[in-house]
Length: 348
Image (cartoon, rainbow, N blue to C red; front, side, top):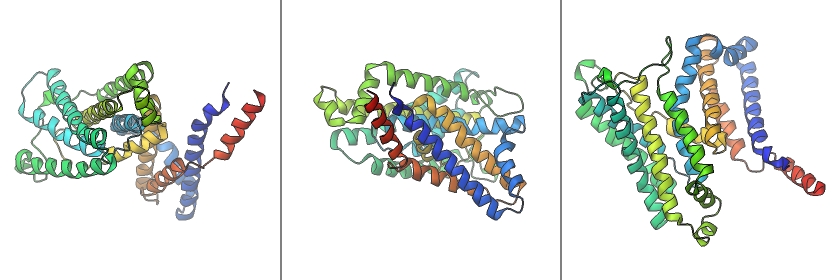
């Protein structure tokens, strides 16, 4: 049995432990009651039904964007356009939630589908630029984030804004457009079921279909895949379409599940957070669930710690920075991997 296959999981766990240890050291230095503060950070998110609900509510959009970005990363596409797509698809879904009059099961379906298709079409643009002209997908996707945010904010200010609300928010959604809640006393909505189904489908697509195999091979070595007869340009466009569809669905679901009107006046940040979730999950769709829940858990813990102790919630940025640095450092624990490989070779 190849022991080194467990290396990445152990490496990720080590990264998380190191990040938490650093966070605990910082808490010990700045807090007057470090043990109590650490206890709040670690245990308070589990203390009530409402807090558990907060963790799951925050994890839902992270799962959507984490899944979208993980598919792109799996194809070796460093595309961060999920941020702008998530935002703009929320605007599109909001337009239909405000102006359409449908029944309670068809209305959210139409709005979410519209946002998802919008996301797929927008994501296809940097995909086509990459496939046809080898344009850098990181640059084009980041530019699109700003463009989509600007257009979305224009629509909010000049076409959707409710002047009577005394805030920069849209008119209220029709009640039939809002997603139903799953558990009383929380805001956990049916978007949780949608994203879990998507994750399972993405796993099956990636590991049980011909197109998934081509996507993975293109990510490993695009030139080799092309010389093997795979149409890598189509693969690149396909993965951008799928990722954009998922990110667009995520934005639509988040708006209709968590709000009664559109109120994002800045990019919500879930697209960039999705990159961190994908990195923690090692671009594995099923692992996105655990990664998103972990990130949501420490953020809710940090928020509760800021409210119940003397340590600010900004400390969570330190944990995230350490995680990104260590996961992106290819040499971290590589000596141990080499030892496992050598031992495996000797035994063989």
